[in-house]
Image (tube, rainbow, N blue to C red; front, side):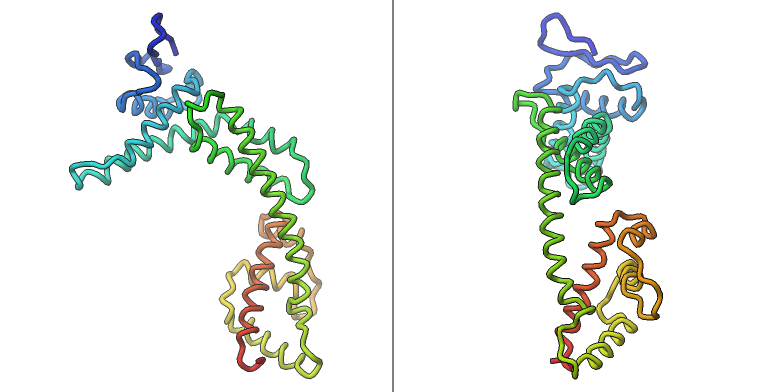
Length: 262
């Protein structure tokens, strides 16, 4: 990128020498925004010359045009879709350039209640939201805005995990492991539970069925830990726990509504 002598505009150079006309950053033209998106697609790895002001100006221009009303209603869908696609290209490029920042913030975040993979996912989602919400007029660099946004997202994730575990301990006391029924109802309760599982009346997903079968085997086989269940499904321990609790909740609601047990 080359800044002109007047300081009023910029000349954007694509890696192979394509030049854009000098354009004030505050009012980047639609054509210039489209060409920036095209350059990012053509030479993603070589587009490191764009500064963040240029990229965010192009991103906002594309987003604005993607939602701009069009007189010709027949052309609205195609035109808006094209601008939406350009916006996504630029947004994804900015995200890629800042992945190191997101993972660095996640690595420095001290939290025992959230798995590392979940922390990275939260940091990535927060980075995407930061890119979409950043305003050039705020007066500071994107990295400052993104760091704050990612930290806040990780703090919220840690709080949710702590609350989730506390709630899980309470719910497990009422799970089908401990039905809470008098002894005379236990046999009937188990029979209704077996019927519900066999006929999938609770509409469990395939993953929920797998997790519940591994965690609470009815054939007398060894019970798998949440960590092992997570590895079988390619998930973290916390991810396996969430699936388990969703399945238990569905079964609990079904049994609570069972007229035979009322």
